[in-house]
Length: 94
Picture 1 (cartoon, one colour):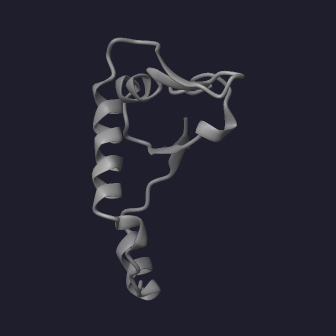
Picture 2 (tube, helix red, strand yellow; picture 1 turned 90 degrees about the vertical axis):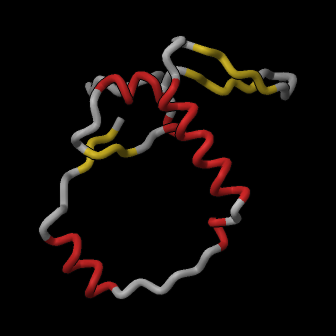
């Protein structure tokens, strides 16, 4: 089991590059969003060290404000394959 393993929640699964250290992984899973049977949503802090989680959340918020989810771009797949050929690293699941 990876050091990034948090509670067994399939909807929160993700991938991180192989070089990521355990401190990053622990900070990413330091908070959990829980939905109560009444429908109320609460955040539960599991660890005080959550700076990387906060950075990821702020980046997602900034992207949302800039509407980046609607940006369409054309990818030249041949150039992309050539660029990734030498730098491909396997990902580990957390």
